[in-house]
Image (tube, rainbow, N blue to C red):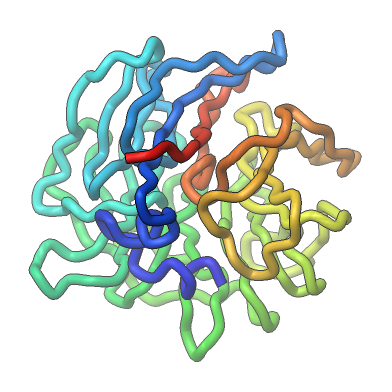
Length: 305
């Protein structure tokens, strides 16, 4: 499983453990334009960063690197570090509420022994985060359009499933019970479905279900490993990251992948990009601009140190 293989995903853990000795990660931040079908490179650096969100006002991208959340302008300019108080171990599962007022962050606790991944919420402009989930690991992936619930992936009783919880905290509500990894839950903008990726068919595919977990429906049907359906603001398509070779229940860094577009009505899927070196960190979280005309993602490469 992705979570089991990558562990806590804090600071230098995770990706760097997968990088061959003597190599350095180079990260490139791209914006894909749906009208032109082209990707624009806006930032390339000799370090590891990942998981862009698009800000609710459309003015910048939010990425995580070394446990912090950084704001990057749409031309690649460095705007600064978002103030998240004592929460400084952010991983690549973070994103905004539909109304743009709240940011949800998966992170280790601030104390020296605060490993794992917990879910916090903070004002979108920064401030003092509030802990939502008491149990770890918990990996945020979505929030309901009305802002009432978060949905996340978590291992309880030896299996990774999809859960939801009130955004103010409270009891976990388990939504999936199939054997194998269920991950990447995300609400559709109309609130009618939660999209997620699941290994229940024996290969990782995109599924959706009603918000209460009923009526699970398979959305992709091919030989590839398909992860993380991010639904566009107009609610008709979703971006999907596809591993060219079957990764079983893992979601590793440093594999050949491509980005594809899933039609949510017809279930037809088409390529948006050519194959490239990516995977974990490329497009873990929602990254559409508010208009649904562009989205952001990360490509990687390795170079000699």
